[in-house]
Length: 299
Image (cartoon, rainbow, N blue to C red; front, side):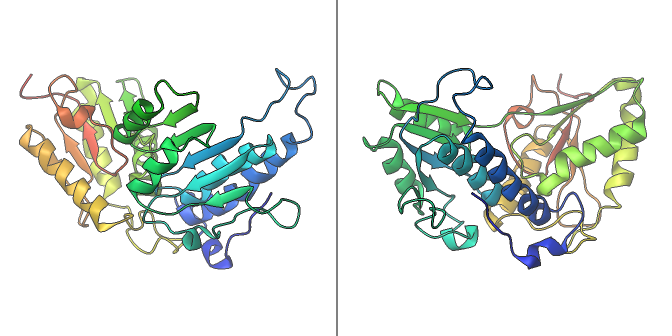
């Protein structure tokens, strides 16, 4: 089980570049799980292997190539069949696969199938009686809907819905290293990561110094073509996601925050909010909108 990425995608070399990162990791992921196929049932495994059956797998838009590998490879290696439903704005052609993804010629046709479409396709897949398990990665709201649909059924389900990752900086931290960690944590893949470090909790005595250093560092980031090796921040996934970034920034300002941006089109930092009084701080997002919680005028 291995896939090739296009040579065009390998033109980018920076670690923040999604195209390079995913193209390198997708075949590695497949090869890793392929190695488990003949090791199940040995002393290295905890229990005798037993395939679940037909797995319906729903993946998001932020890492489509790698998410497909994470879902398909372990399922096939352990003897299951797969029906993969990608995000509606990622067609099977863009994923580099067809409707029948079964590796040729070693796997029979239909072992791994791609079912494109919108929410109605995902809902039909989750409710289908022929599936034995649903594996979902995406938003918390959709994850709750899937849980309600599967409640009381014999169908197993697992959901990865992300969280609100936070960076915590105290006064004994080396600020230059902290700034680099903050930038990498929120701007990798343009912040479109379920575990992106979208919250920043700072000890008040160093808040001003850290925020000034962070603003200076953000001013050096280069926006541009995501396939250009000199680009730090590439394209947002869609116009809808860009609108979501702006909406969250405006909401933060309405809650009493101070917004700051370097000379670019993306808002980068919203400071002055605390989780106990700000819905913006508590809301789970996968977008490059940083919120700092050094202090809050409303608390």
